[in-house]
Image 1 (tube, rainbow, N blue to C red):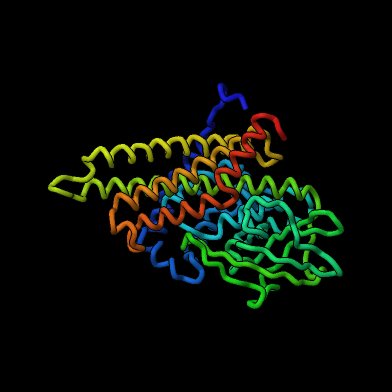
Image 2 (cartoon, rainbow, N blue to C red; image 1 turned 90 degrees about the vertical axis):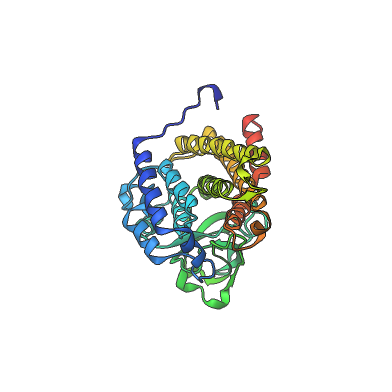
Length: 372
């Protein structure tokens, strides 16, 4: 990447999407609504999901041939930034990533599933098998006429009509597509997720091969690129959440008094707040740089560099903002009733999702110095 000539292309379409999405997400997800869903089994509002489907968000980046809008992956960044700003959680990210992984294989058998996802079918990608999000080895396999294995932290699995599952068959990595109704309750174990706005399950697989669809094509590349796209979308969410977290801090600093003075007048609180603001500006630049680079085809070296940079920076920014918010609220900040907790928990989850900052910086170094 020639950093001296790097440009951020923020299109008119992205600007319109950002304006529309911010208003819609704010209406759908005020903070009291977020809190009301923390203990809900589904964790999201059906009305919010249906509005996203009606707005065409589920097919925004998919080609018109499957019912999508073909706006490109860059159009997703303002959507997820807006969702993060309102802490709005739905199965949208899971569905987008499942669709991207299928599409990137180039297999014609994916067409019917992409049509369903574009039309609003809930889908998810089950690729995590170990505690390490970055692990690439796949133990799930098709053997003896059955798909057998175990997948961890499958996001939004409870309501997914389509599950995209990587597996090995005769030494070759493939994708398998499983219907949600093929997995009964005994196959599923609910995860307790640190970010209480998220839902995930672990899934034990034992399904006859005749009952699944096997997708061939460029599966390895599709998986690696989809995980990078997932990292970018989490980075966009984190950036939006950091903005709201800073707003929460500033509102508190302007109203809380100690020793007869507003605490916002103390430099010990002013300076870290400015540090958060500067980190948010850096994160925004990086997520929109990545949005300018990612394409429907194979991700270029520049696109991969941009995604690694965006994820490593944005997830650290939200953790920093959440930590400062907790500290600045004093003893109240350590209680679950304080909204600062929601941002810190979102940040700690986002920091690990699709690889932590160290994971991305190691791969970034390899790309920059042509070690790959």
